Image 1 (tube, rainbow, N blue to C red):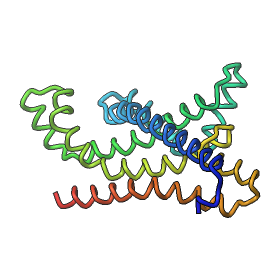
Image 2 (image 1 turned 30 degrees about the horizontal axis):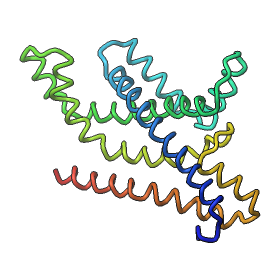
Image 3 (image 1 turned 180 degrees about the vertical axis):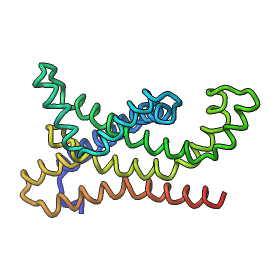
Length: 215
């Protein structure tokens, strides 16, 4: 299919793919850091930390990602804090990923039997040693399948960045469709590229899920 396009069109698709992958990596890494902090706050003994983390999670999980991107890009511009589209979408996706990964990892942390941490506290260990040596190693193992599943959704979700003028893979497809007047061909190629990216990640997630289930 892709051979039906010229070198210039193929290059544009590859450029869009580059920005899609880069945005996905930044959002996933930034969201991973933020999600880890959110998960720790969500499972903290301090009410104010739990309440703040819960409010953050519910705000981002309970509203559309498209609206969140609008609020970051256009909302800050109304406050005389205009952002470059690249910075705006990176920030929007990172905040969204932080909320979802924070909730995923919160569930994984709370899935670890409480008796283990209670026994550690009874032996005189404090919070951080217990989390580092007992809870988090097991929670990471439990969180791998849903985390990989979220990564697939994140890659596909980057297509929404086009709404604020960020030229990623989907926006590139839209521009090529307008230029070539061949929307079926262009969007078929774009869909194939997304499939080539996401399918191996999905297979990895399923493989890890089966492996961890057996373990």
